[in-house]
Every structure is written in C-alpha cells, then in structure tokens.
Image (cartoon, rainbow, N blue to C red; front, side, top):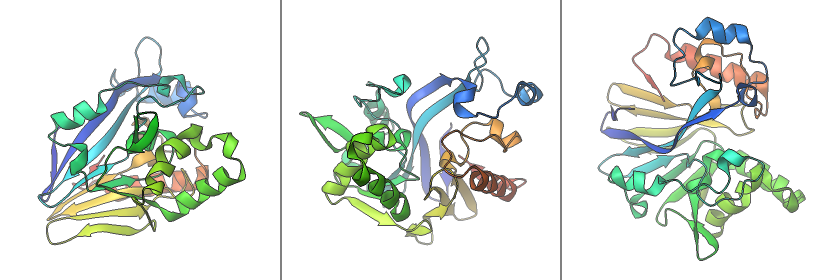
Amino acid sequence: MRQLRIGDMRIDRLVEIAALPLDREFLFANVTDEVIAANRCWLDERFIEPATGRFILSHHSYVVRTPRWTAIVDTCCGNHKERPGAPFWHRLNQPYLENMQALGVHPDEVDFVMCTHLHVDHVGWNTRLVNGSWVPTFPNARYLMGRTEYEHWDRQHRENPARGVNRGSFVDSVLPVVATGQAEFVGADHCVFDDREATLRFVPAPGHTIGNTMIDLRGGHDHAVMSGDVIHHPIQCAAPWLSNAADFDPEAALATRVKLLERLADTPSFLL
C-alpha cells in the first residue's frame, strides 16, 4: 500500500506477515469452484496462490498519524505466543517492531491502540514478552476496545478459564493491558478524535463478533474506512455472501458487508 493521506492524517500499513496462504475452506466454508473461476480474471497471484489455489491473506496493522497523535489499528498476532491449534500463528518471530520503526514510529510514541474486535489475530501485539511476562507493547497508549466485545469474552473466560478464550489471546494479549489500567472500554459508535482537520472514530459493524466495529476516518474532503474483519479477502467484494467460519452471526455479517460496499461504491472513499 502506498502511503495514504486523509486530510492531515498519514496512514501507513504496518506489516506482520506479508502473505500467508490459507486453505480456502478455512476462510469460507461456502466457497465454490464456480465463484473462484468467475473472478480469476482479477484474482491474481497477490490473492490466490497459483499452484495450490489457497487464498492469500496479509496480516497488518494500520498506523495513523497527525502532528498531534499516533494511533495503531489492530495489532495482528504477536511474537512468541502459544497457538498450537493454529500452527501458522504459533510462536511467531516476525520483525513487526522493526517494521514500525522503519516507518518512523517508536512504541513509546503511540497514543491510541484501537481494536476493531478481540480475535486472536487482531490483538497479538497489544503485548510483548519481557522476562517471562506479557507487558503492554505501547506503554503510553490508551487501548480502546468495545465494551460489549470485552464483556462477552471476559464472561466466557471467567466461566471457563481453562478453555483459552480466542486461542489464549484473551489472557496473554488483552488482560495484561486491563491490569495496567490502559484499557478503555467504549461504545460501538465512539469518537476518538474530532477537530477541523481529522475525525477518527469507531463505527458499529455487527456480525463477525458480538461487538465488531470498523474505523471511520475523515479529513477535509477525504474519507476512508478500515473494514477490519467485515471483509477478509478481496473476493468478498464480488461475492459478499461468502461467510467466514469465525462469524458470530453470519446473516448480520453479510448485511454489514453489503451495506459497506454499497455505501462506498462509486465514491472517492478509500476501503482499507
């Protein structure tokens, strides 16, 4: 992704895993050969692995900067995390922080960490391993997460701590920032920053999780939406009925996806 400007906001993609091939049925249980064939004219090697037909995903955060603040949206999988049930995320050792510093951002400089939802591949770099303990990666940041989303997973964790909610990420990537007092629980429609130059806010995006959100950015005449897991792969822009296996409410997820695509189609807005 080229650097993007929305008003006075600078947006950069912060890569953890540039290209991860996954079995197509892992993403979409209802995918068919016919829908793939109908879209192969534009689904090139960036999106589908030619030799295997596996779908390719990028795991990345977005860094949003103005002269007044720095925010990170979703924090991928994280290093050194125990994910034995998902070998492609298990005990990673990726240069995420090095990639961040190559963009000119140090973890101490981050003001907001925004979690669209609390699945394992969206919260991993909330924490890092220091002397055997999980500590906040961004020591000066407010970690913003949906109140409904947090309460849902916290209730499941309390009912069965041994279950390992969200593949264990609730314990190693969410609760440590709650323990330090850095977590801030917000409504699904919540404005983080709003002035004449920049507006950054959560907007409701029901379906993928019980409190799923997207991020809306406005500056001047510019507009962008960070869709998070409303859209997992570009093929869903052509076939929005493809349903991710992890969707909490597939019908609501489909309605959210279609509404987003219809809202942005034939406009100058950016979909990230």
